[in-house]
Image 1 (cartoon, one colour):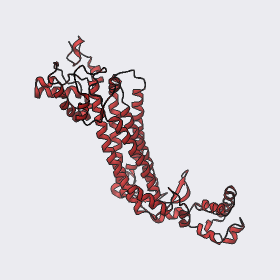
Image 2: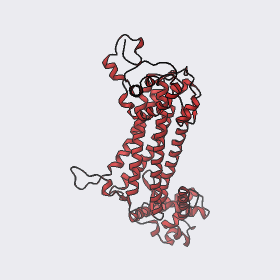
Image 3: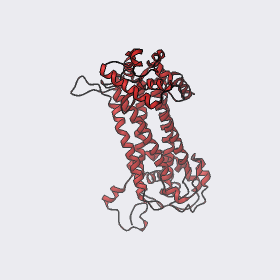
Image 4: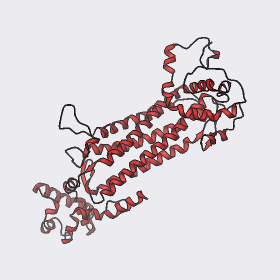
Amino acid sequence: MSEQPWGGRFEEEPDPLIDRFTQQLRIDQALQEIETEFSDDHLPPVAGEGKVRASPPEDIHMAVEQRLREKLGALGGKLHTGRSRNDQVAADLRLYVKAAGAQLLEAISALESALIGRAEEHLDTVMPGYTHTQRAQPVLLAHHLLAYVEMFRRDQGRFRDALKRADVSPLGAGALAGSGFPIDRIALAEDLGFAAAAANSLDAVADRDFALELIAACSTAMIHLSRLCGEIVLWTSAEFSFANLPDSLASGSSMMPNKKNPCAAELIRAKSGRVAGDLVNLLMVLKGLPLAYNRDLQEDKEALFDAVDTTLSCLQVTARLVGGVHFDREVMRSAALAGYTLATEVADYLSRKGMPFRDAHRIVGQLVAKAIESHRRLEDFSLAELQQFSGLFAADVVDHLTLEGALKSRDVIGGTSPARVKEALARVKA
């Protein structure tokens, strides 16, 4: 007879290669504390019921049970009465998701605070806004930073939603059909801090959509981190020179003495793909599984643990980068003045004077072409020269050929006018 905990109907020991291939104790170590916690809660309800045969440790569940047997004797042997590793591991993972989600929410809040703090410092810092990585229109740096706050606020909502659906206890579902012992599933759920007990025993042990949701939220947050860190990489390059990282947040080159590299930001950008891979990994594990439990689900943990650990560390590092980066106000302002970023403002000016916007767009395009040809800025043209393009140009056009004028005109909810950005800052600080 096999010495495995399930060995009663087996006459041979497992092949060593197969045994090594299927073992999961190394991965399960992350669940040890959780497994111990709810095993303590499970013993009292079943202490007077049934008998359980001794078993050597195969995974974290069996390891905890063996340790309890060593300490408690026969009482520890009753631990597995009325439950299966199927509902055990589902409970472990749900408790893990709840704890991990709380950590992720705390880390993302810290990152938001860092972004909000830097936005508050740069309410008057002007920079070029970009489309297609080409200078487009002037915006405030604070407006740009607050855009990321909005993204991470939505990520917070996704994490909270995932936690709501993870907050259901599968204990008492047994292997798939429910426990044959009089376990009070609602009381057990409450003891472990769950909001409810799962309504269907098959669903309780068979699905990992709660883990998928957390990994999906991690993946989306990592995409936002990747975009932010990608801009840190660009902006700290000599070609942009918008920002500079302190030495403590940068790395050097083993060969080139002149180099100062934003390696942490680059790594976060790369790790976003890793977490997306974790999501695809678990999706592919689940996609073809018949009900109820299948050993395929052993593969859920590595994807979940890696996604959580990676996202958590990247949130923490990004908060440090955001808090430490230095923005060069003058370089940003000079860049905002270059590239004819005021052209849209001039077209809007003509449109407000009654010209159809498409005609205004064409005329200002011709004006930009003339400016490029003559190596001048739009604000360098005299009123007489402007009137050669359209008689609608008047003396008040000079008010629209400044960065401040362009910013002030974007006075809509969510716009980059100073007044609207202050409103947005007050809202996210509330």
